Length: 336
Image 1 (cartoon, rainbow, N blue to C red):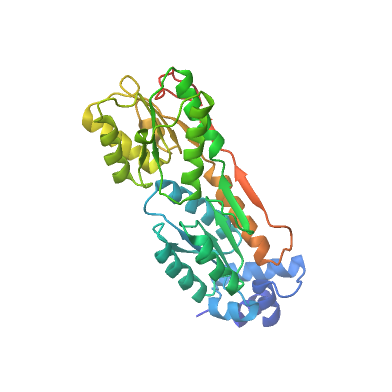
Image 2 (image 1 turned 120 degrees about the horizontal axis):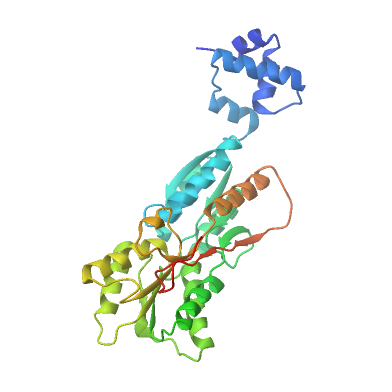
């Protein structure tokens, strides 16, 4: 097995110099650093992670608590975060919270036990009274992602109210008066804000939101499928549908296909969240597309600043989605 001493011999430097290059514990000239890095490449040396953590007091890992199984959007978000973390020399350690506060508490506790250098959390309902205090008490840097909470910490999330208001207003402009909404998991800030955007658009036109047209899809494919079936089986069904995340959009479209309903002839449809494979739908979906790359990059960069000891003011950053005006709303196809 190649050792640090072997690298030092090839680079013609002291073993301590190799250690300083690997761990960043002391300044090394650019010329010497390059010799060490070339020696590492030529010898195939792999640093012992445990030994490195003992020297630097870091594990170079970032804990991530997120519900990756219930929403394909989160898979794209994790990929974006992993790219930025890896470039900075960190590894993501993933725990699936299933958007359940008890599971999330266990996941975060396990990540803290692994001595991660920082945490990124997509908070479940109730996190501000449970998980967040636990992380604070541990003094581990953390950033919240996707869902803003009324608490002082670094956070990054999409804008929700105005984009959904815009989608709903567009359907109203097209003459729809019975517009239904398939909403997300109760208690999530994103679910609350997106429903608020839907209701705000109706109220602005003098329309009182009808509770019978608001169906809770629980942020899942299956629940959205069942709720859409129920909406469309009513004696006075909606003529348009606003679906408030991409997992639920899949469920809604599954229900429409089962009933033989055509979009937008039988039902206009718009959604919050876009799909990487949206071009495969016919017609293509009018949607608010989140910038998952910007969100993931921002969250990791904010966390790395805290890990490095930054004392800059806490930030709450909201990233606007992009309106993709296509044909599922009943308009002619628009270019992206």
